[in-house]
Length: 337
Image 1 (tube, one colour):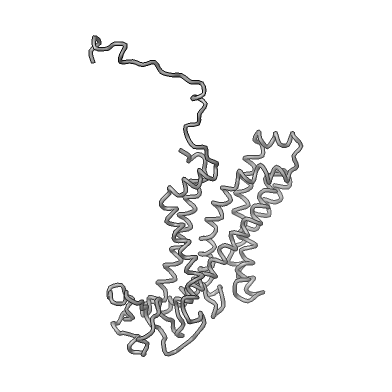
Image 2 (image 1 turned 135 degrees about the horizontal axis):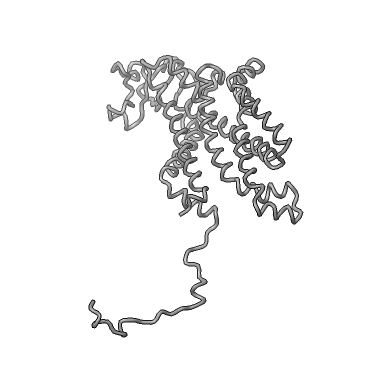
């Protein structure tokens, strides 16, 4: 626009209001509300959360959906391949009851009226029930490991970091000794004392599983204890327990949650590894690791015995890692936009 076309009628004075400058242009949200919003904006974390919820539902409802028990044996239905209603008509899905040799095992064994979604094993046990029952046990051990981390590891790390000095030095030397003992040695010692099972695995996790959490909590406490708000609380006469519970724990809660989320898949893999090498649960009790171990012996002939528990283990580990990554980003104030 040329200068001669500019005139005062084209401009209007801006209205400056002191009250308007004090208004908050964005809705006020708390830290946890903002973390929840950022978590649900993360598609990977949401996908992981959905998978975890679905697996939890199937783990507790799956055994109820079948009239068979997890240890019910029937030699007339041994090694049946998967067969699912309606989907059996789609041959390329591999759930039509035909094995890798092209033989309809259901027709050959007079089981045409029955459907076993995940097939059966060498003793005729329903794999659908056994896999979801094993998922219950694997998740129980995993959440137990996370609970042990939060109880022992948080308390140990907080005391070590907060009091410091000689107390911290002695407690850290103890952690170094515990870390130097391999988990496998500990579990073998407990199997010699106790029977193989959940108790021996739990005791091994109690002794060696909390050290990572303790070190993370100690580092967070060391970073916080010399900051101004903690020093102000001390100068006002606050006790050590109040400083820890009211001021420090809320600030390290994000790190505790994230570490616990990564502890769960590690514990599941640890239990699966022990069961795979024969140091896990005793039959007929099954976990995902012991089911993989049993199916691995006949992998080339009956691949379904390995495939389904292996897929569920993979989904659990991937989903918890995705959710853990999402929580790490959501609870990190530096990631806030």
